Amino acid sequence: MKAVSIAEPGRLVKLVTGAILGCGGWVLSRGANDAGVVSLLFEFERSQCIEMYSALVSSGVELSPNGHLGFTELCRCTRLQAAECGGEIASVDLEIQTLPAEDWKGTACTREG
Image 1: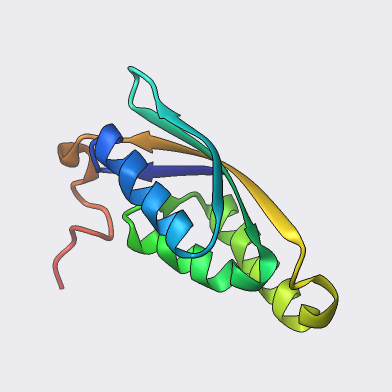
Image 2: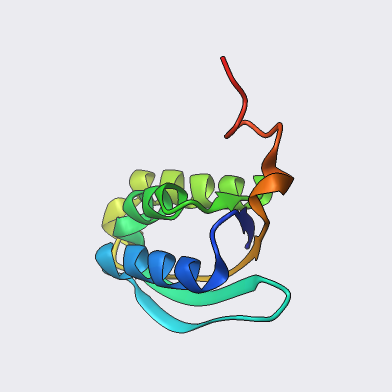
């Protein structure tokens, strides 16, 4: 899953890791490279799907359109079949490209009105 963020990579790793752990998830690997790419491999119980999705977004991660679609479908499917799959484990390989704040001018985050 791809995403972008304006947060500094080292800070973002800590922030997103905390969000994942706060939702009961498990971080299997994490790190950042010199190009500003933060990589996280994590798992969580599907019953926590909505909480996990919300935590990622609220931690400053802007998921790609496919990332939003994938999480939305997982949450919808889990809600409809909670008895059968709520206890299953979902695995996410998340790659976040961090961007300098000036690259975000004109995005929905910074537009006025």
